[in-house]
Image (spheres, rainbow, N blue to C red):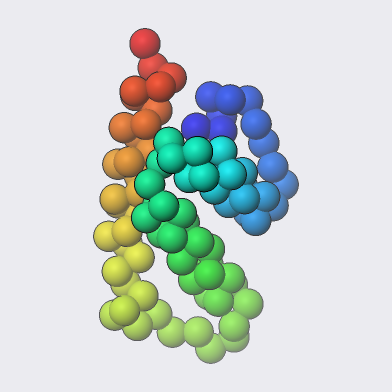
Length: 83
């Protein structure tokens, strides 16, 4: 979505903030997807910075959430950017 708007950021936190401000807070995208995105970012940070981080079955649900997120974003792009 940001590529279609020609917007780029150097930090993940800036992308998440922009996503929340411009899509979630304006109700273009359901808040559920903000929670999925923020959960993925937390998991990424833990796996990158905790030396002995182990993914549990609870965290494996993130894969299903990611699939749901991707489908939603693809749908939004098709409805709003693709002719």
